Image 1: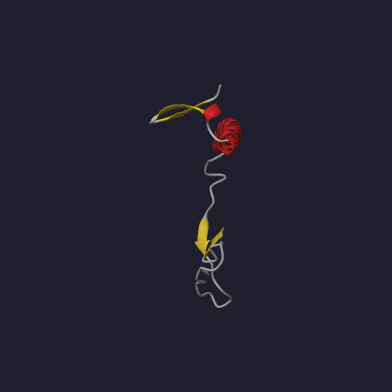
Image 2 (image 1 turned 90 degrees about the vertical axis):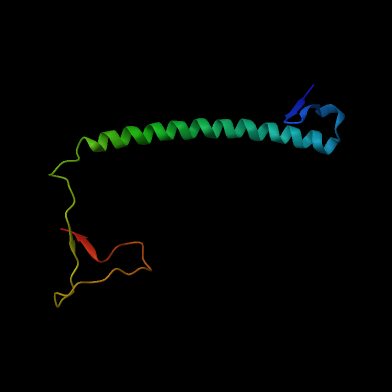
Length: 93
């Protein structure tokens, strides 16, 4: 017997229409899939934290990025183009 639990009570799915019995079954598969995805996300988050920690071991003055304003051939500052993802106004020295 399958029970559909709601805030309004518990309901016997076998007494529902065939369409809703199938909907209940599909919902159960989705719940299992979501639980699996949740575990996958937790694993990936843990891996990301590990990589951040490893990268952090080399964050020091030797690897620090130093930015300077970008200039054109005449020595004038170049503005950022808001239509591109890059920030053209700054370059790494």
